[in-house]
Image (cartoon, rainbow, N blue to C red; front, top):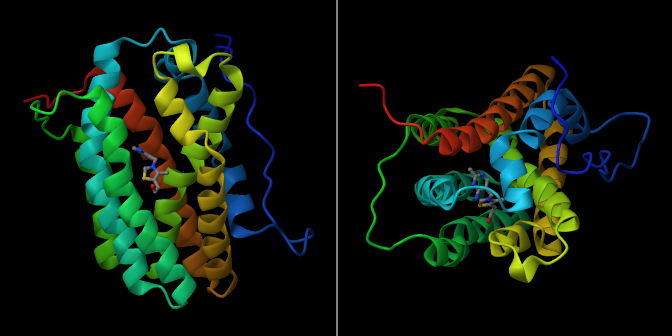
Length: 238
Ligand SMILES: Cc1ncc(C[n+]2csc(CCO)c2C)c(N)n1
């Protein structure tokens, strides 16, 4: 069967700052190794529907409800990065991102979700947040940094391409979501998160770097699953 054509334009080449181009950084290698997952994200009907505005409103609201649950635990994982970071600059970056995850995105959510509707955590939201909290509790700092990175990077990558593909954001049904993640401030945060991961990997032993790659790939898979679960209105089987 021919693979569906993505509505989004092709992903940008890896644009990591790299002082020694002959040796790829951790993030460049991680991005390349997860190319198939991102291709699956680009052709997912949730995202193609988001891009052309045809995504059903209830599906978007279901996504937002699950995301509100996800973001609080994601904020906890970022706070755990802050707690374990060595450099003061990194403590500032992670703690600011933790606050941003919990606070700022609430405003986006408030415009789309009826405040009274309480969602229960879907199987995929449970799996993704439990995974992040398990790495926060039991993994190394290096592994945790790798596990939180796809959340930044995949949204920045998808957000920028969605923004470029939409002509009139003001009249797009999901224009505010697209503007949030297609914002240059978001690209700067992603770049900082990548730099931290690359710095940590540079000083880590080979086994730790492999665990970082496994964590990056696992979180990337969960990002695909998160959109897919919302699209299917996933519920518990029993
Ligand atoms: C499932 C899921 N994954 C990633 C994001 C995007 N995101 C949430 S917090 C944050 C960094 C700090 O604000 C980023 C990039 C999301 N909203 N939901």
